[in-house]
Image (cartoon, rainbow over the protein chains, first blue to last red):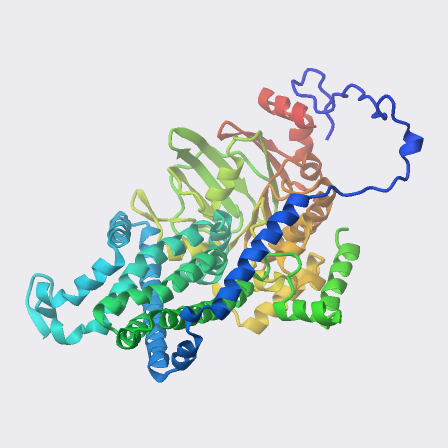
Length: 345
Length: 273
């Protein structure tokens, strides 16, 4: 496009005044500087700080090995004891139920908060408000005492006749109360995480799907959610890991999960520190497994997000060790080359 | 050829007279406000089947809103849009137009292709998956059939070798060509282009315009909002100039671009030519 009207207020191509050509300052001889070697700046304090930190770390590790208070013999004795393994099973069970209930309900609440119905939006907002406000431990004790508030639970027409009912005491035992409490608590946080992921998906995506006539549920399931997952996953993994450790709160209900079981044993034997270490190391192991899982799930949902997908850790390790270029890497390189050469006409 | 008809007070009955001479796209008395801002103030437009209409106008003149109203991405305040004799987004009962259920609107949109300025390809799906998605999900085509059709369309836009690539691995021009193939996959009666080259680097504009020109020659009914005057001159059957939410004038490109009758058209062309 050319601008032919001289009166146009904004002529794009006004020639800028010539800039002075950069010349070496006074006293610098360009010829003399030519081809000299450069030396990076030295950072002696960086080395000093690093050394100090390493010394502290070594001292701590030395203490772990030599301080008899850690009592590694007892640690070994209980680390794989049957009671502890069973308790881990219980911890995993609570985590799994809490996650499933929390995220299923959270997805519903998130959907309600994004709904076009003002009633659903308000109810969902109130749910999040209430359940984020109540400390988990308070809620757990509440559910545990549900039968005090509601003796019987029934189904029927609202405010009308009841078709059948049952006693609350029998239905909601300690485990049920714990799962319910964890799940409801988790749902409030999950709802906000899921909603955050969904609103982060560019509006044009939904618009394009709508313009193509794609049915509404499929717009959500196929177009919006997979993209929202990228935003949801890191925060969701945080929540699952918090929940895993948060299950230790249910010791107040005397459920035999990992922390409760460790307490029972040190209550009997008096060896507090080694049993706390048993619980700690197991929590670290479980969190590590979850973190690795997170990495791979995130990788799956990242497809298409980058021009060249990053190598898997396994492939990276192989490259690091053997320097053997994995075949997949060569393929990626070939594809990149083909794109650059035959790319834009 | 297009004629500037005065607002027809009675909208057609649903699916009434799809008889020969009726225009493919019929827009009558379109009004649309965003809050207190009146973007469309009574737009009338007829687009005959198989013709190419290019809409020009300064930014804020309501071009994009008109295009989005045609496939009901925007609700209307007054007036109506009909495609192939069928009211879009509304159903007539007596002297009222009732908005259709979303499911119905989605069905109608499968007959209207829309190409966005920012492509809006689905980044987590491959090029092929982008193209087959709507035929499978909206029209219920068998996957194998949709796939074959999609590959043929990709061939047509010159991107058959990119079927397995993800959109972010393509240049802007390539992405827009995929977006055109995606819109064509529904075999729409009308194709709407909303500034299809405005987000592209200058050297990539040509490859997209070439694809659109090719479609124009094959007799696809198209409405193109653009700033490419050269393209309008070469391809359009009718050029429509919009300003301030109304159609100021329209006519064949040679007439409108070289001998505009209205002062506003002249002022606009003087700026962009």
